[in-house]
Image: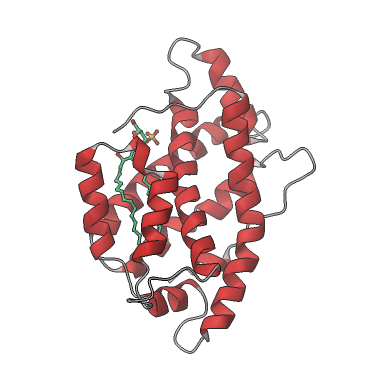
Length: 209
Ligand code: EIS
């Protein structure tokens, strides 16, 4: 099993440009993490995230020297496909991928902050719902929102999720949370930088699926 926290994101340079190669290497470990969540509903999510990564990687590999940063790719596609951009190519794939990354970020941050349902302290539903509302809900019509509800029922227990994230069976909760906080530093900075790039290039869309 690949542990989410084993693959740390790199610190950003001062101009906050995200290095395409390093980014792709790090996010490519994410999809296999879904396997340890059990339910088949995660298979659907895994293939969507995988599809995004594959698409961005395919563009990058066409010309790695030209596409050193993620912004290089988005700007090149803006020039090459002015009529359809930004709903095209790696620009679209990264638009969606960043929402999944934001979902994970808000979920982990909420766990790290100790947010809990006092009546069900070993459930992560409150954390998952918060992440969904902040990162994805507004882009989903009711059918996909129903898929989310199904995924929510399949969410693991807090204690099992924290162990899966971190060091397996014997890890103490506080150690897991310390790892989560450490992971979030560069991860959050990277996700924020991608969001800022989409805003500054006017590349964000708000259609629903
Ligand atoms: C995009 O998908 C494609 O990604 C994009 C292009 O085809 C574009 C065209 O419009 O569509 O329809 C997809 C959308 N993707 C749009 C929906 C897929 C199913 C989503 C179900 C929602 C479930 C929410 C998550 C609930 C999880 C509960 C977790 C409990 C622990 C550690 C857990 C991590 C979970 C991470 C969740 C990431 C969700 C990402 C969903 C993205 C989405 O909404 S393109 O493809 O351009 O590459 O060709």
